[in-house]
Length: 228
Image (cartoon, rainbow, N blue to C red; front, side, top):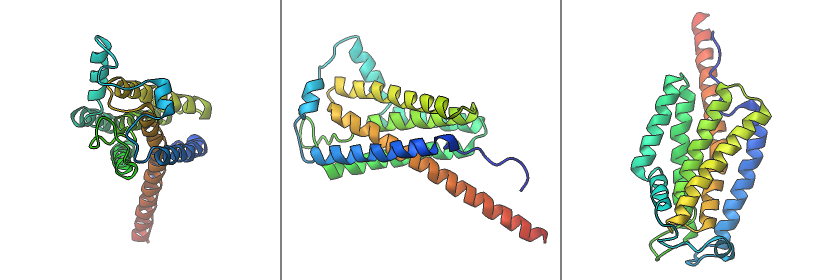
């Protein structure tokens, strides 16, 4: 095939570092899940940080928390995903658009599955809380956008890692604060959701790159056979 290959969604300079972070994040998710499996009360760390209630914050910060929370609800999340996918397509980054859809789906799916497996609840037996799906989604989306920016700006390893980790931390902190402030999650639920995104997105990006590269290679082989 002629022409330049499509840019990787997981920049080669970040693969090892993000791979190690993904493994560490997955371990944190598992450890917290084991520690709080079946619990319905805040743990020691949660009590040390804050005791979440339905009125942890008042106006005007409560309105800010509600607005942030909306971005993790189905309607708000769908708006963000559509905007991100549209941006990728306008920038001619179809591989990144695939990553957005796959990354969000796998992150939300992992969070939902973990909630059922861990069985931690808040404010009643029906409110599964670990990990925070809102935090996982928002962090995952920020991570993927940061990866796209890193590749498009051709950032080096240090600058790229700084951008990616800053985006993940900012998104996780913002949504995590909103969830705790609204009494929807314990702080450790938020940490679990943040780490879920850190574990899922690098693996998903690697898988998208590997699948796309194999497809390109197969198409190239088919083209060469036709020319013979």
